[in-house]
Length: 162
Ligand SMILES: Nc1c(C(=O)O)ncn1[C@@H]1O[C@H](COP(=O)(O)O)[C@@H](O)[C@H]1O
Image (cartoon, rainbow, N blue to C red; front, side, top):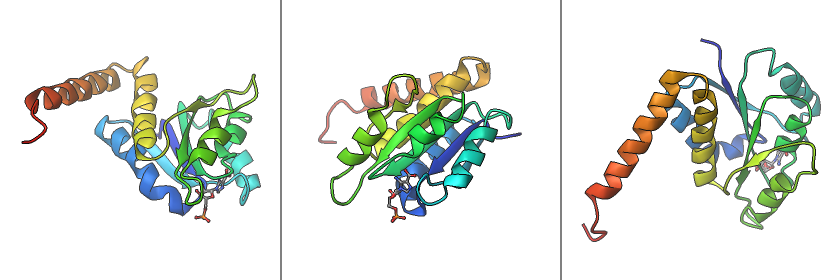
């Protein structure tokens, strides 16, 4: 089946964080594609990717980037497909730079910003599945099952010492 979620990132060095988004999509049975695309280093590719996204059937784009993280915003400027931004932790500023770059969009171009790092990537995968689940019952059921399992796992281990 054609991918429904595009997972892109500014560099191959972002993969250890961004793979958490793909793991969640895999778990929830949502088809996705993965690609390195950079607003700074491959601007033509970025425009091509973003402009063709809707036509190719992508329903959500997850874009992870670190530092001067312009990728999610620039992609959002070129497509009607919803963009979820994942701030990748940077060495010098621990991802605060990435977070602010992604979150502080000018009004009129929307990026849904997640938390810095692994939790943000995981939740981007989950949120993308929830968006797909608004019109796909099997994905919604997979999300419901994941949440029930997560709740049960917490209830099963009430004592943190064991
Ligand atoms: N923020 C961006 C963009 C962009 O926004 O287009 N392209 C690459 N980068 C980021 O640069 C960081 C360092 O990249 P390298 O490790 O390749 O030097 C990565 O976190 C990447 O997301």
